[in-house]
Image 1 (spheres, rainbow, N blue to C red):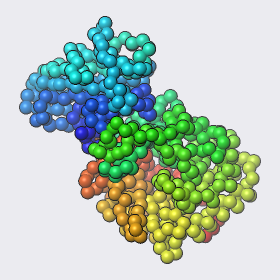
Image 2 (image 1 turned 180 degrees about the vertical axis):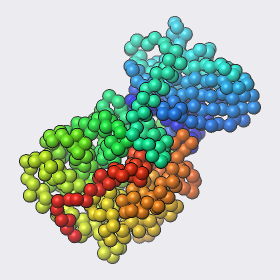
Image 3 (image 1 turned 90 degrees about the vertical axis):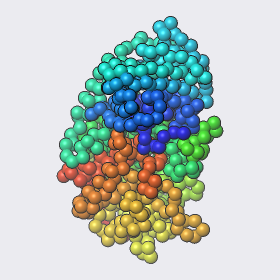
Image 4 (image 1 turned 30 degrees about the horizontal axis):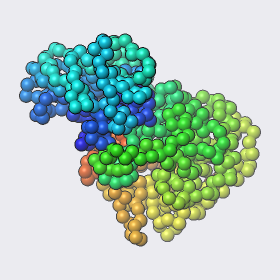
Length: 604
């Protein structure tokens, strides 16, 4: 049985990542990329689907964990009746092949330890053939895959596993190294674990030192930024939404999706978060990745892509995995990549707009943006599947129409600033038309607020973004009324849920937890509206649900005090960074994005 989601920590090398439980078990690792098949898949099944555990013998153990300051080096301290040991886990920043280093340091007394390694390629399916190399390393090979285990201690085979028992005294350190590579390639020369540790520490500390934010909650900002850095695929600059697939939004249910891809809709929040924290290089690479992924026929624009911009993300189910605590099916790939979602046009235009404000580059990716807006002229009236990727028939989602407005608004502003030759008057007419259309159909006089979709009576947390993208000022009476409904109907436990479902004509809870990014968006709204006290109160509530090493998932189940959804969630950590900078900096991301000095008069 896998651990609770909140009991995991992340280690990574900026090309892939692993999840390490409080029990010393690495239950998830995909190699060589975030979206590659897993060789440790116990997270979504059982230990027999692959894991690597190092822990003291017996169960009477007190566990505390922390990351070394300004790094992604994890320390797990085990206190037993016989002494204390610290397990140091990390992945060196990628040079050639991915590797995991695990060091066991004796702190006091003498502690007996046990190591249990179960390698299963192809998402927990394929059992490798294990042999011993001439230098004493263990080789696990199956088809194209090879894993090499090196250790300073004897390791033996036992029931399709590799195991070892050993003791560690105070002042003693033993180490293990697991390296992945092609079964047809050469085995690299060993390197001392202490050298790997020193180099990895230096790399992370140097990167973290670039952070410019020095205000309140700076530790939380720094930890979130390091987590985001770990989710960047270094060769391209693409940022995956999470390191996992199929962690459930609803426990035991079928709403389990693959998040190991790059979503366009997170683009502007991510760009501004990096910029305001001082990471302009990462922001620029993310913008370039977006432009390259979106290049081509505008009719084929997708909501998500692979880490190198791949379009084909065909979804399939993994029948041999039982799912996280029985939540099936386990999915690889994401069918939502084939949906029409109009909001991504606005996200892309806004990202390019914000990037131009940063670099003052007139023509960067201009042709792509113009083609996308010209295409949107013909398609903005179509129904789509919305920000929450609802499967089934499309609807006219209010947020989607607003983001279509954003696409025209930002492109028009760029054209005016940089004297682009575009059909300005025609575009302004469409921009005004969309604004009036949303105000007429997306606002319900009967409900007294903006609603999830045209003809609906329900509010939706995506409506929090209307003032944050500058569609209407935060104190517009229609916005204020919408926020009040969200507070009343979508915050039963002090955190924001995405929406309520309608079943048999009655409102019913969706069964999922509070959606953490939406809760941060509400705090951003409070900041824009001048309600600093409410923003700080909500922020403190959100920070309390971080796990013991400062990580956050997609959702939080208040009643069960547990994380839900894929983990750690990039959008949640981006939202944390932006909310704190919005509150404690004079020119935060929300103020920059919600610039209301438009050169047209909004309709409606």
